[in-house]
Length: 451
Ligand SMILES: Cc1cc2nc3c(=O)[nH]c(=O)nc-3n(C[C@H](O)[C@H](O)[C@H](O)COP(=O)(O)OP(=O)(O)OC[C@H]3O[C@@H](n4cnc5c(N)ncnc54)[C@H](O)[C@@H]3O)c2cc1C
Image: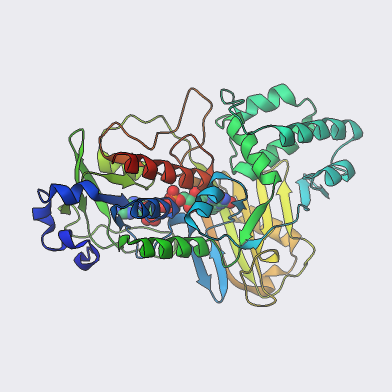
């Protein structure tokens, strides 16, 4: 529902009239569609840069895929979320003054290989001591480990896939499988054919520097962004779905539909179109930033020629337990199967005292039974301590991989005058939330540079 009081004053009188309204207001006015972390971050840059910013979000709440749901005192992110220290995202949040607090998981864990259970080789010590590798494997793995660590963040290996890089740099089969698993862990990508080697290696290097599990979940980042945006003067209109961007080579305005209903992620999210959605309320605008998924952006603007995009998917079983049956087993990674297991509450404040919050996931998607079997092995008897449990079968972790050049992701600046893009599928920088935040900054800077 469009709550007119939430709009800047010049829209309140008559949105329809405003379609041909004050040019002066329109020129300084920016509409952002999408209240995930990309839209929120862009809104702060723009409002601090002197623009009148109005952000439309179709849901009742902000945060998009970075939301955290509170269930019986346990904080559930949408599947496992790790924040990459030193990535572009952390630079953007630092620029915006948004703190990132939480725990750094220690680099120890179990490598799952068939029936074998070995130490996961994620640092030099575990690499030299693990029984996953033979002596010859260790030598090759050590050389590769040091080489990747020493690589400068550069434009190297942008034209080949991560698979091709492995083909030409790794000879021993088990080292290759292990590196594939480490690439998967760092990037969430289970299809290394389609992932650019340079982007993958950069992300592995970031992961080697350590990640943070955020205290109270990623909602903490969303809330801090929201509060900074409010302070900067951003206007928020929630429960309002933008249904069209009107343009004729230059942006002329947007149309807004009706109230959205949804059920919780436990039962899948869906949205019900409302009577009158097809008509829409028109608002004039010369500058619009779309911080939505690519399929929605395509619908809103009509014909666009973007490169094909490969989304990154994950199925995840998120489990809250009143106690952890085996406190020693906190992290495991499948080497020959794309599996992930981590007790996030071991490192971040996510549960009431004594409780545990676990994510068991399969890269690329998959069914619940395999994840439950892994949890049975890691935490025997876990079913007796379940407080809340949900299975999310096919989450979009990222809307687009970074492909090997010459393929690219769409630029934040579009050929339509006044139309900009941000999200984890936009721009040439980073993966996952790093890409979302870096493209948000690029789009906002480009808008501000327009004068
Ligand atoms: C299971 C899982 C695990 C992840 N793990 C990590 C991780 O470990 N590290 C990491 O860095 N990242 C991770 N991510 C990715 C991270 O969550 C995303 O990159 C980030 O949240 C994307 O933000 P965004 O703003 O670009 O998009 P979104 O969060 O998708 O936001 C888009 C917003 O637009 C709104 N919207 C859509 N259409 C309309 C419309 N027509 N009108 C109005 N509003 C609209 C949506 O409701 C939504 O709020 C993970 C994601 C998932 C799902």
